[in-house]
Image (cartoon, rainbow, N blue to C red; front, side):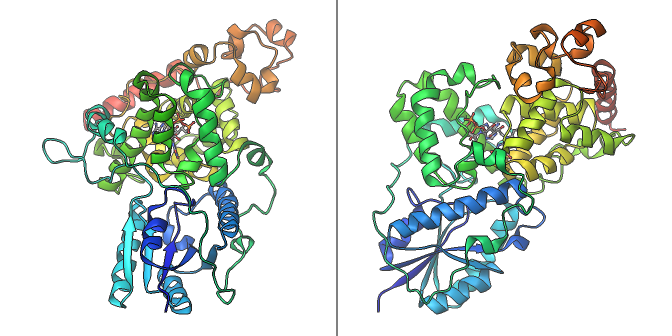
Length: 479
Ligand code: FAD
């Protein structure tokens, strides 16, 4: 009898550098790649609408890549343990291999499944296919998890440089019997019923081939200028690999290898690798502080006096890109239309929501969760807690971004604002980030009437800054 292994695919939707697939191939003659759709197990963080859109296309791409190699992707629905059991029985599999997930609900589920399958006599193995470094390995001198990035990075950086080389995708895989039932990707109903996804389709190519193509384009065209261009939202100065990394369509090892091979000069590669270091840092925070998607890491912030007056309308204006503050509105509209937002702008919109509008960071994290194609529990939680001032190594709460100054500094010609807020297109550069400072005649000359074509600011930046600082003083004093 040939030996058969299931390869349970989740956040590793690729064939190259896939340790679980490699592990199974080394031990067994027949390989059954399986994806199980079981959103209930991810409650309360079930994939949002943009993530589901991506997942649909990524699963299709994976199935095609498997078909090209003589295999296919078996798709099932239901509870993961039940589905694995049933498939193992049908296929005569004696082994199950998977790459680890690190979200609290997934870790708990996977340990339970491993114990149950082993008790039933199946051989199980899990691997690291998502990170460069397991989140439990690096500790401070006091044997505690890191809460500050710089010392963490000092330990991590040399390890990134010594990753084993990534493995290539197998040229062929053993065929899978037609008798094994497979759901079509459409049956998972991941696609929107109202077609709002045109902007996403124009922008992205989910799947391993799209990921590798974007990586090689970034290494040849973007990496040299990354350090200067990464903060400028009007240019394509970053890699935009985040959704591909989230879904595991390529591994961080593959990214590091290409970056180092393309630009061996550490001056050029370090600023980029450091960002991958932030990703690893976020995962070690989520691993050690599993409560943080819902609760502030700094417990003082649990008592923060968020603003309740007009809360719903403030949140709605922020979500819809109608705050009257151009760089914020541009970011929120970019997010809505493309499922992605530039990192600098993510920090600006998060600061406005949590500080000037004094709305809970969890509300912002939820909106991002639903609308980002790269929505990632570790990175999103870390990004929001950092921005709100309550997380690890956070921007101090009292450092409140002034969105006008941020716009003038990082979008000096207003190209980003003009792209996403075309109603402001004709305003001169010096007014594009604060149309309310123009005289009515100046605005009329540019075809902008505030309150009609574009909103007045929903908040006074100076007064709301002072109120936020007063609220912060209150929790600092513990009252
Ligand atoms: P690049 O600049 O090309 O960076 C390369 C890779 O490094 C990224 O793809 C990403 O995987 C990682 N990375 C970069 N910056 C960070 C960071 N600050 N923290 C952790 N990892 C980072 N990133 C997500 O992947 N998913 C999220 O849900 C998410 N939510 C965020 C929410 C807020 C409020 C903030 C401020 C940041 C958030 N980030 C999130 C981090 C960052 O904005 C994105 O990773 C980045 O913009 C993705 O674009 P890129 O791939 O072009 O990045």
